[in-house]
Image 1 (tube, rainbow, N blue to C red):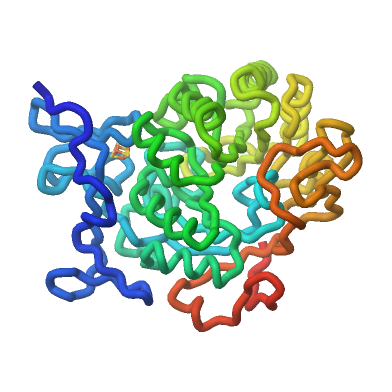
Image 2: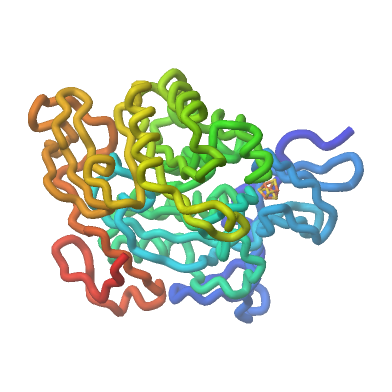
Length: 412
Ligand code: SF4
């Protein structure tokens, strides 16, 4: 009989192997004291199979590994008959972004978010827009190492209202992401997951218990697209969306990247948005964003703005209350309009906020309808800046908390 259920080594960081990260971000070996770049953390979701392999149970891919092998995500591996996470405590880099870039339009609008990712991904999208990170096999080139506490402290000092796990899918570094989220929550900083939602039910429940908001990338509304273009399946993603909406308090928004000729037909958009309203209700915002040729999908043109506008119109006709066009200049499609009276309550041009007509608790100033989302007082003032940061240098930089002047910035 195969061993059943969870056989993992329990809490990740507490039982992590080879984890010793100095406050400055250096990683040292706890036994030898030597600094090393390989950090393996024990994980929970796996079980042994009858044939001697060990199956990872984090995502529906269910990789079955022999000693020394890595899963498709490349960052979870079998070591000494267990599945370990090989990227605990290491990041491909940190940036302070506007929360609207995640994209989240109904979650602390205008606030700054400390964004980071690691390496690896559990899908294999041919159009990946972050493939240098998600497909990275060069783990030792990960730029920044940091404990959860270091990240939380940096986010606070940088004036960020939240930390986002993004650039690659946090599902593959679940143990690190949840530890960071816990450290952030202790400082009143929220945690945001930017994910494809491709995760099994048990780890899903654990993962989202630590999150405050999620943007789930719904890549298409056909199993064929998921199979041919992402080497995955649609159904588990739909289950994650329903789970988030019906069984958690996590604030949910959805992104749909439209690729000409592959997932942008009227029929598919109609079916998808009908499903969203029927199964999730009308209040889950959706962002239609533009594709540009990248990675292994170079034979398709960039998405015309008219396609985004068409998708938004279909969604609105089908009853989605908050449908947006993303990563284009489109004030009408990028702004938030009250579902009660139609008032433009948050004006946006790309990631920059304009006129803001909501009360502190998120009510329309014209008709008092409550706009769905997470609102806390006046909007933030981060704007559309994108500021790369080195965590080890954060403590030495000028304080950029609200009201303080920011240090150097990089325009988006
Ligand atoms: S998380 Fe990685 S190792 Fe685990 S099943 Fe998914 S792709 Fe495979």
